[in-house]
Amino acid sequence: MAKVFKRTHMCGELRRDNAGQAVVLNGWIQKRRNLGGLIFCDLRDKTGIIQIVFNDQIPQELFERADRLRSEFVVGVRGEVKERESKNKELPTGEVEVYVSDMIIYSEAETPPIYVKDDDNVSEELRLKYRYLDLRKSKMQKNLTFRHKIYKVTRDFFDSEGFTEVETPMLIKPTPEGARDYLVPSRVNPGKFYALPQSPQMFKQILMAGGTDRYFQVAKCFRDEDLRADRQPEFTQIDLEMSFVEADDVIGVQERFLQKVFRDVMGVEVQIPFPRLTYDEAMERYGSDKPDTRVGFELKCLNDTVKDCSFPVFTDALAAGGDVRGINMNGCSDKFSRKDVDKMAESIKTFGAKGLVWMRVEEEEIRSSANKFFAQEELRRIADVFEAKAGDLILIVAAKPKVVFDSLGFLRRDLAGKLGMLSDAQYNLLWVVDFPLYEYDEEEDRLQAMHHPFTSPKEEDIPLLDSDPLKVKANAYDIILNGVELGGGSIRIHDQTLQKKMFQVLGMSDEEIRSKFGFLIEAFQYGVPPHGGLAYGLDRLVMLLCGAPNIREVIAFPKNQNAQCMMSEAPSAVAEKDLSELSIQLAPEV
Image (cartoon, rainbow, N blue to C red; front, side, top):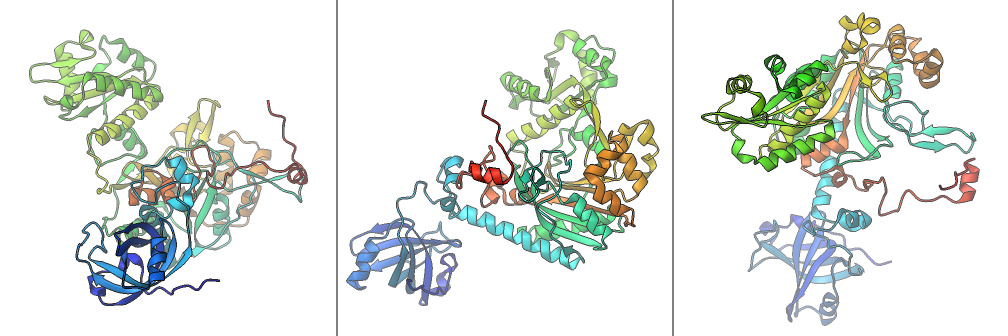
């Protein structure tokens, strides 16, 4: 077994103050340059790069070994720090270099299939396949260190607030959580299955019934659903629950937590309390229940203004119970061509919109795609709703309310991004509260819980559960950062009768309730405190705060968008013998 040089410094730590010191470094060779009597190498570890130098005054054998060095060789060196004659202003260590007096080669490396540098411009598929090389990059190490700091702040903060970290099971009973479960067969209970948790929801409520009072956990969760930039089949939550609280108590703790995260990890001060918007106000003004408030372009309702117009697109939408709403891209008329507007119309078809009506406000007149249906005075009345001025571009959608909100909510943020108006250095945090308790699922033709079936309704709305459940508001709250939901939670139902009523409105039979939630309902029979909580998507939080384009950049070993690990080649086939032990028989391929 080769000896190890015990390092005295990390590569990225050395500065001019270290000149004259004897140091020991370990790391990977980034590159080598042989200039005859001098060999220069860049030595890299997780903290950065330092230039090391081999000159012809060292023993010949050491110089020859230095000449063998190639990219990604792993070495240890002893030497003296000296000030560089030719300084490199691009590197934090660029004022010094290390003259090597001894070296050990721990391992050699073949030519790597991808470059280990941040600007390698290699495909994500290759980066994930050779993740062990990709992780050596400075940006990846910074992301992992950043994530670690958030873990530490999280644990320190919640400990200081009287929370107890409790691990909940990974193998649980399948329960409806809004997505498909990952199922795990039981060998000792043939034909039966565990599920991997989509969240620790019922267990954290059981902990409240068990007297834990304040629980938190950095929890692994699993959902078998279609993937996207900020979604993975396995993800991490900062999960918490509190007893004897109301919504304001939970929100207050979370505001202090986020303030500490921003201060300790980002060096940024955020002011608390954060603004609050009701769900209805967020939808009316921004077309989204996770509004980005860094820019304006707020939605305006035109229903009363156009109800008697002769434009069938508007009148037909209103007659069908829909809405006519729009946004004013203030001063942006000259920034978007007719072709650009046509692309906007195409982009919102994914939300169900059939078209986009535009109006360009000019000094002398208003031009519109619906000009032939409106007199100038009618167009002016519409423009007045938006307080429009010359140079403004108004975009209008007429359709079902959800289609209108989704389309305009997307457009206002998408166009602001294209105009460079969404600053990553601006952090707009806010709460959205008073969500609907239920929403209607058109595909399944039934009501479903907007959050989950343990969410408490607003007390004043409880009488509506029988008569008009879609009007019932939930005692729920989401925390939003720059148009992205960081986390969400609610005050839970702790009354047995009310919980049963919630299930009944969702169409569950007594047998179904017992089958899916029996142990929780039983626990509630023996006294449970009022309680509420919240869960953050930790991967998403890290992604947003460190400016990564997607959550795969802040997870050490992520899956691709087909839920595959390119490096380990999971998921993989299983031997027939292993399937037989689990009482599983695969259906023949069609």
